[in-house]
Image (cartoon, rainbow, N blue to C red; front, side):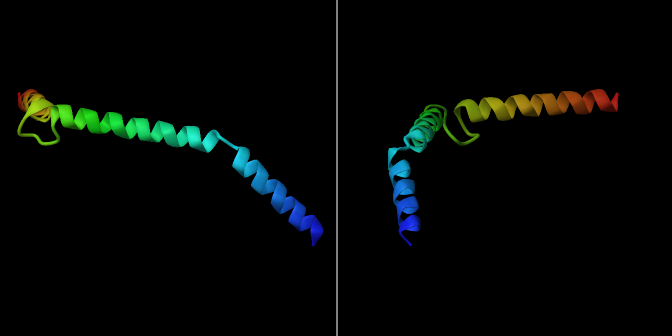
Amino acid sequence: MLKFYIKTTEAFKRLTADQDGVVSFEYVIVAACIVAAVAAAFGTTTASGIGLALSTAIGKISTAVQTAVSA
C-alpha cells in the first residue's frame, strides 16, 4: 500500500511541476483573441467587409467556370 501511495505522490509532484500544458493553453488564448480581432475588424456577415468581397469573388469565379464549361 505504501508503494502505491509513493507512486501517486510522485505523480502529483510531476503534474504540478509540468508547465507544458500551461504554455499550450496560453497559445490557445492568443489564437482565440486573434480570431476575435479579425472577426471584429472585417465582420462576420456577407453584407459588408471581407465577407462581401469573398462572396463577390466566389460568385464571379463560379460564373466564369460555368461560362467556360457551357462554351
